[in-house]
Amino acid sequence: MDVMTIIIVALVAVALGVGLGYFILKSQSKSGQMRLAAVEESAAETRAAAEAEKKTVLLEAKEEAIRTLAKAEDDARQVRLEVGAQERRLRQKEESLDRKTDEIENRQRRLQQREEDAEGRLREIELLRTEQVLAIERVAALTRDEARSVLLQRVEEEVRT
Image 1: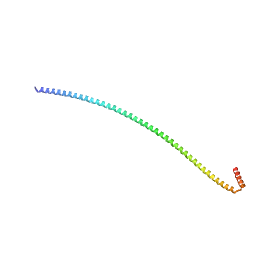
Image 2: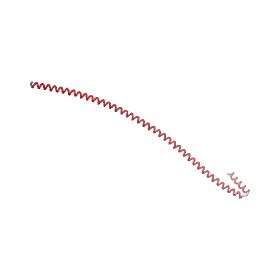
Image 3: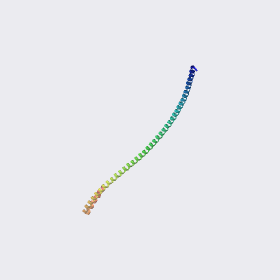
Image 4: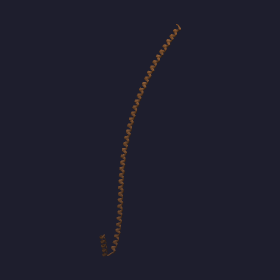
């Protein structure tokens, strides 16, 4: 065998090795690309599922926030109604107390006036009683005819007035 044949065989072997290596590398590359494509597809599906889940969670959170806000508004409205009712009742009670206080003050003024009137009458009665006692004492000192004439004069004076 000569050198040439060995070189040709070596060249053929090298060519076959390069071809075979290229073929193996290409198939591994295709397999890697396929795996990469599968991973990318899986990642895309996972991303899509995550986005869908995110939208669902956000929607549920918004709905819950809306329900919570509506309940809070209802509670606030109810509290405002109750406070309004309490304020009305309190205002009515205050007005009632004011009326009763006015009535009591009016009664007290009337009673005080009556008391003053009664005291005035009592003073008049005392004065009249004193005058009568003095008159009786004077009459007791007069004779019958003198008493009659004094009495007639008084009656005439009362009739004139």
